[in-house]
Length: 153
Image 1 (cartoon, helix red, strand yellow):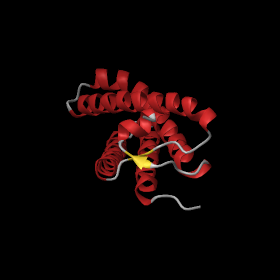
Image 2 (cartoon, rainbow, N blue to C red; image 1 turned 90 degrees about the horizontal axis):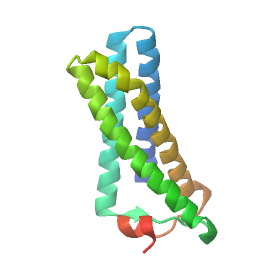
Image 3 (cartoon, helix red, strand yellow; image 1 turned 90 degrees about the vertical axis):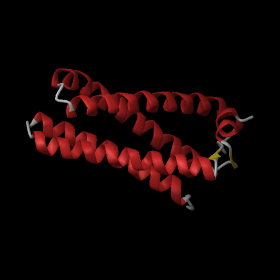
Image 4 (cartoon, one colour; image 1 turned 180 degrees about the horizontal axis):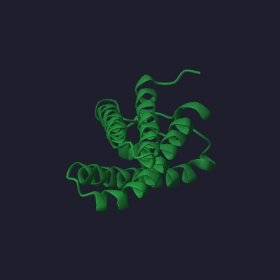
């Protein structure tokens, strides 16, 4: 199996981010606040590293189109759009949750945190699925601009 370097590394960072969120969730349940903060910061840093690699690759190289069977392309496209929307929502919620934690607005932080975690796990899982569909399960399609890769234009 010959997987591309940058998509693989960025996927590893998003997996790490989800693992750190899970660890942070366990730590806060145990009331270990300082360790929770560290785990969540590690999650945020991992997510930012993912985003930096993803955007750099998108800008300088492009995105990879779905290379699987034509009869699955519409399902993949709907799944990809769902993943993108979920990721954007998760990122915004993550920034809000971390911000409220730093500002000691713990009532808001405690309410949004568990929801943010679930959205983030869902985003990470669908992101790994997209990676597997693009680079592991099927042979990759052409690498091209983001709009063309997503919409197949």
